[in-house]
Structures are given as structure tokens and as C-alpha cells.
Length: 124
Image (cartoon, rainbow, N blue to C red; front, side):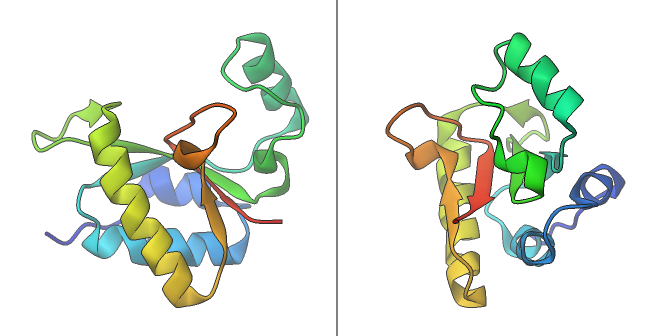
């Protein structure tokens, strides 16, 4: 099935590094599941609030520099899901597209310290 980025996703990509924008614009078209970009670049103030609420673990987030994107996957019924099986399939697809485009991207679902399945970031 062919998907495309909606207005919310496009708006959330504003300010994100161009290579990440290109990656997600291509990856959505033949993704195994539809997804939405829920977060892109953040201000220091937004990051402080997320850390205070426990939704982020660092004030050195790659979101502050436009190097990171968070997504939410949709299940077969069009509902947002947090079930890891969807994120694993979508992440494998996104990482394959990144490799094809020649950019190095890390998926938060593969981190050893803590798992952040919706998160993707450019490698330093």
C-alpha cells in the first residue's frame, strides 16, 4: 500500500535536517505500515518540559539540533499503536532506505541503555 506524509508530519519535519526530511518522505511511500511524524525539532523550553515529565531523559537530545524524528505507527485498523512489532518492521524499512540514501541513522529501538522505539536520529 502506498502512503504519504500528511500535513501534521510535514509540519513536524520543518527545521529537521534535510537528509532526515528526505529519508522520511521516501520511507513513507512503501512502508510496511503507515506512520505519522509526531516530533521533529524542539526548543530548549520544550525539551525541559519533556525531561521534567519523564518523557525524555536528556537535555542533550538530538531533537534540539534537528537531527532526530519521532514517529507513531498505525495498525491495520488505522489506529495509533505502541506495539513494538509495528515499530520493528517500520524501523527495518527506514534503516534500509537510509542505507540506500547513504546516510547513517540510529533507531532508538536498538539502544542498550533504554528503548525508544519511535525515535530515529542521524549518527554523529
